[in-house]
Length: 190
Image (tube, rainbow, N blue to C red; front, side, top):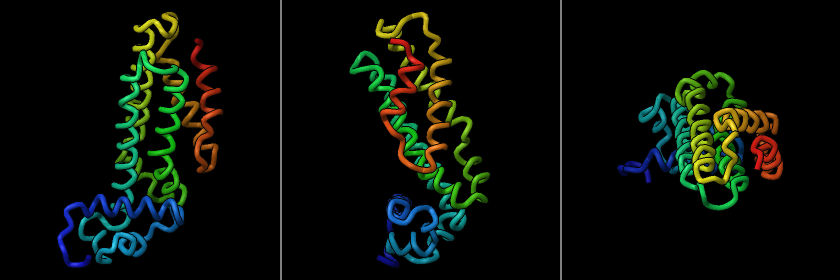
């Protein structure tokens, strides 16, 4: 409702952007579409964010952060379930949940790439995801479920790089879990 304080406005606007992305793609993310979808005043993005670009930057950063938070649970899975299943699920979740909206935005609005890249610190996000995979692999080694002679840091680096490449060559399609599992199986000798 317009004119009524909305304590969860940011959450509502991000949810509206998610719905628009799913329905209309990144090109559908206009100020008017977002505010109409969230049922709020047209100028809200300019009052609460640095315009549409500021909103989209914060939206992309939020979605990537959420994906990293999900991935942070991976090391706790050590010793439980199948190693290939755990790694495949984590890789698919990371790239499909957080990266897809960000990649779609950058593809649709190349001018935003620098701004989004600075906000999400893409290098540090990739490093963080690499560290979560390495921590998981180390924990599996410690539990005796992964051979001790495997170089877990190099495997994590190769895993993130390979899946990252697969994601960007998939042209915005969701990752094929079977293909992801095949890559991981090649990297991790069980």
